[in-house]
Amino acid sequence: MFCPNCGKDLGIGARFCNNCGFNLSQGAAKGPDPDANTGELIVSVPYSYNE
Ligand SMILES: [Zn+2]
Image 1 (tube, rainbow, N blue to C red):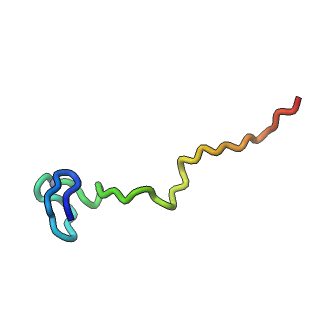
Image 2 (tube, rainbow, N blue to C red; image 1 turned 180 degrees about the vertical axis):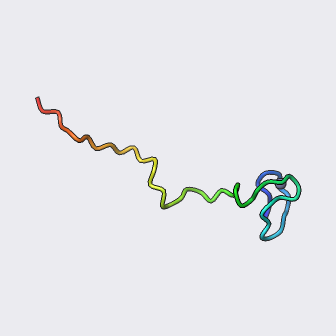
Image 3 (cartoon, rainbow, N blue to C red; image 1 turned 120 degrees about the vertical axis):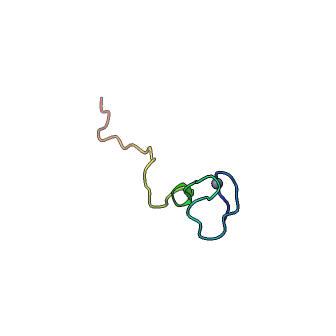
């Protein structure tokens, strides 16, 4: 694998970059979490406008 910070080839299973010290286990971007259900802006109005 390559360091996402400096691009150095670190080999398989590296957790820290030995070149820049980047924490690979923490900094690895996995993309959006499919279980995360935040960010939806769907707002249901709990009341109706009756005039
Ligand atoms: Zn690095």
